[in-house]
Length: 137
View 1: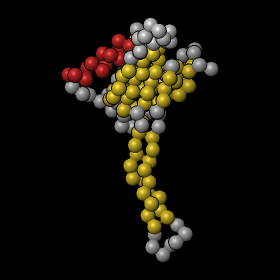
View 2: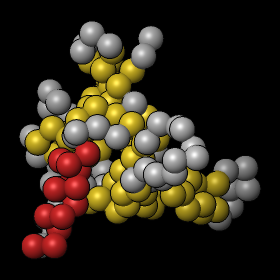
View 3: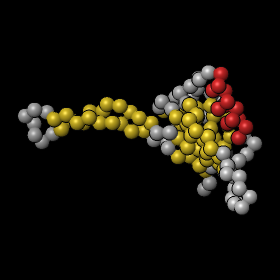
View 4: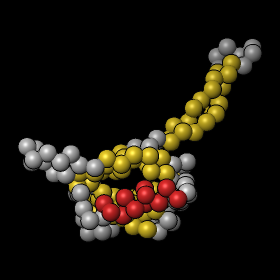
C-alpha cells in the first residue's frame, strides 16, 4: 500500500513526493482556577500553532518546478494556498489537506558524493498559517 503525496500551489502541480511529515497543529491551553471551586480548573484555548511540513522525494525533473517557485520569492512574497493529496499507486485519493498562506522555508538538494551510491533526494519544507478545505486537489 504505497502512498504518494501530490503538492499543488495555487493550482500549479509541483509533483509527487514519497514522504510527508509535519501535518500537525497544536492548541495552546491556559489554565484558570475558579475561586471557591477547588475540584475544577478551566482549560481555555489561547493560540493555535502549525508545524512546518517536510516533503521528500528522489530527485526528478519536477525539481525544477520547486526551484522556480522558490526563485519567484525574489520578486516579492505572495502567500498562496496549497493542497497536499495522499494518493494510492492507482492515483485515487486517500486523504487531502488544504493549507493557507504557504511559504517555502527550506529546500535541501542531494548530497552528490561518488563514494555514496544512495538515491539522490530532495527535501522541501513549507510553513503555513492553517488548514482549509482542500477543494478537490
